[in-house]
Length: 287
Length: 322
View 1 (cartoon, each protein chain N blue to C red):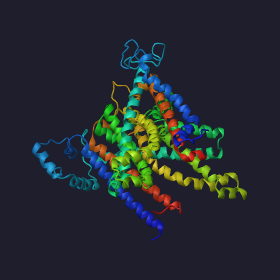
View 2: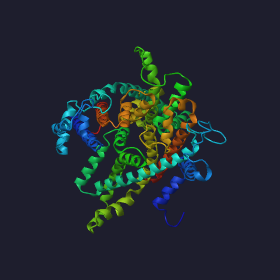
View 3: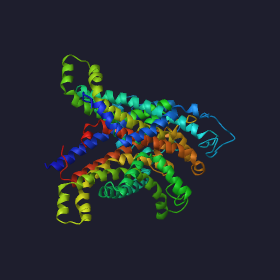
View 4: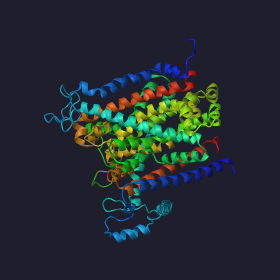
């Protein structure tokens, strides 16, 4: 024990490090991330290299996970698809973090009008079931990486806005905020000097769990043919091939490998997210 | 006025407000969609001159400010006029949407019933055998069920039971061309319904388990045990009845999620319901059908949530009023 008592962040990290499920999540996710990011270094197939001599080849020595209907290496597409999924997830989560935080913080620190307008917008966005809103947004915004990022971000921010508002409504009444207001602090100062540091734990946990959610949403959209269009690779559009009975029945490696990778990734991220949530929850130390 | 009645009135008013909010959202999205909104009002198989189009635009008030347009659209929507589909023969949207509700209700009804039965049974079993082998196995299964996306469970299920084992047909709701038979319908229904139920079974199971564990520690359960009530009766009559109250709300609030799962299951199994209708409409950018279906689904979910809350207030006298 150090002479100084540990700060809340250090204690949270300590709790995280002693959570076996969360560590297992890290142990799955980190190697996977490394493989996906560095795949051109260890795999000599590109995601769109066509090997006409080996179409629909089963997994073997040359193509570890086999090839698809036009002779592209499934492992290479899996790795490239992982890049797409992660890119879409990270960008959409960043966007929804920004929108969710600003709307939630403005609602909490603003006047009653700002609060009720912001919260009615949130209510409005939450009246439709998520997948239905996803389809509606996709029909308006379109397909491709950029539009898919927007579709997922626009679907996801309201939940965060609610959580941030609830937290900052408490913070608003604290002395240091009242003092800052009394000294004439502007909205931006309140938002980023007092709001952000006090909501950062919520946002870290939300971001982690939302990355898993965004990966699932992207895969779902691409699976329906409404997300990332081919020839670009994504886990969802690789599984879209299984809508053909021949692929589903005879070329299982083409859709099972992205499916298994997807579930493994999402499980790992959810373990990490749950670990972070428990670590940041001050009550969890009491158990 | 008794507090229960006050609660019901309050909840009804909130429901109406949310329905209006939903209609505003759908209207704004419809206007944000690419293309000319007048298309939604024309039967596409009818020929139109530019003069006629302009006249129509004036007639439908599309040259008016947005709030005026909204009120006109709302008035039409209330009388059941949601415009025309942009595909095929240009069917009116409302009958088209309504004709797809039945299959979805059947699929979701079966799926949710399965989820409620197995979820509650599994949750009770897990709580009673806390931290035992059965509990652990159920927890792992629940985690897998929650983490697997509906389209993947649908594909795996289709592959195993329809393609490999050939136990059930691989798609559609009835055998095409054959006369209607209940057995045929059930054979087509069983696999998609089971697959739809998986995520919900997992969710209900975890919730029931947590709620049961809480109740099993309560004083009245200890009292029941102390006065010699048989263990089965303690679990089933004293504990479960109280533990189920929060689960009822959960079931109501996951209907929206079930609709999401149904979209994917219907796409994989070619089930002729709302989900398939919407996905087909989105692929064709058929905005009147997309928004009409969204409006009907949203209204349906709001109604179900309202009914859940009212049922909850009716069964639990401790319900918080306000």
